Image (cartoon, rainbow, N blue to C red; front, top):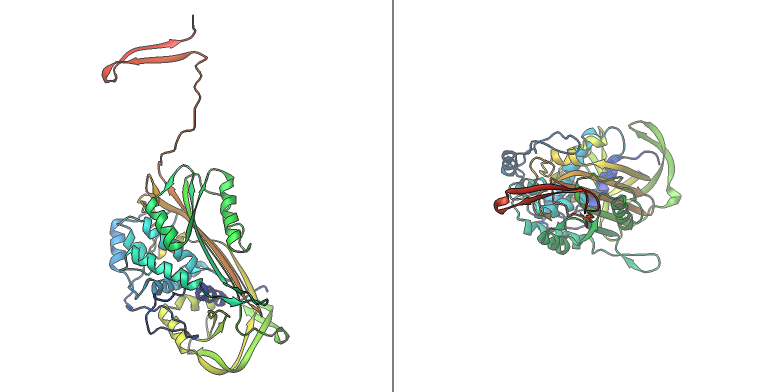
Amino acid sequence: MKKAMAIFTAAALLLLCACGGPGDTPVDATDADGTDIATATDTTAADATTQETTSGTVPGTTKARVTAAAAQARKFGSPAAGANDFAFRLGKALLEDGGKGNFVCSPYSVWLPLAALVNATDAAHRPALLNALGAAGFTEQELNGAAAQMLGALTSGRSMTADGERHNPLRIANAVFVNKNVTLNRNFEQVFRDSYRGSLQSVDFASPGAVKTVNDWASKNTDGLIKNIIDRFDPGTVAAIANAIYFSDRWEREFSPDQTEKGAFNGTNGKTDAQFMLREGHSLPYYEDERLQAMPLKFTTGGGLLVLLPRSGGANAMLSSITSEYFEKIQNGAAPATGKLLLPRFSIDSGVMDLVGALAALGVPLFDAGDPALNGLIEGGPLWVDKAVQKAVIEVDEKGTTAAAVTVMMACGAALPQPTAPFSMVCDKPFVFVLCGSGGHILFTGVVNQID
């Protein structure tokens, strides 16, 4: 399939990867399937300061800006609620220059490593990062607890396979790759293991082997869907934090291949052929208002894909305009109705996306080399995030949905001490000597050109 509706895929990964787990959500919030979702409790909002990027570094992050960002913080009832809000804000930021092409991202794959990095961020920058994540007003301990609950809730589902086995449709992996010459901060390592189920690997970022190590990790944790997230590491790279998400599940009610028909898809670049899957009946969950039509499609484990069709305007504009509150309204408002859905089969590969500009626009304060914020990631010096990238893929057909994403954030440090290699000094040729007395005063100097 050449073209597909961009809004379908953004909503898909949002539902697969960004919904909160039990204990994180307000009591009254439920989706169309009856599953709790996170909602905001305070709708006072302020736009994050947009910063220009140059070669992956965002200059000009000052303590005044950090303080201002914290003062403007929008507060939610739980970090999980803020994660949903982050999902829409990130999508909007990435779509600023989205053009006419398809779009897919995994907001949760970005949110989770940033949440872990809160534990390595200094006190001056931490409020701005919490605000950007939608966790303003929460401590890092509360954020860690919420992240652990979300991971547990997201990965606890089980679905039945054709051979009667039960499997988990969602896999989430976190890892920190640390240069062999430095040591990961012990407190961060403990939190990363306990709350984020993270692993630690030592690599040599100066060697091509580091690229292979990270790419092999990405491939292993996405069932081979994402193999080449990194092509090189900058010489100054000290550490990299990575997240991988893999999801594959069947529809609770599969589409019949016999009812799939060829038709024209009117895309932004003109008409193309598409294969449209049909869902029709009497008690289909459905929502509509003056802006859009919407239908949730359930998976066997209870999650789902929410399809959103704008009544007018483009899909990019629609996704950019959605808030977490409107998302909740759509899910809560879906009710049984008679009708039909024609949904094209589609698959999208995002390619490797640069996240730095979008995250800086959301107020993430980790990109300034002149004011490095990560003082608790390694032992020996503060770091800043030099690059942040993601690759995401999704495929939707009559049987179900498969999606994967990998996010990698690379941290650099200035003038970090490097251990010396074992040396060999063989004075088998002319050499110089300097003899010093007490206080370091030079008493003699000389040259040995020959031994008599």
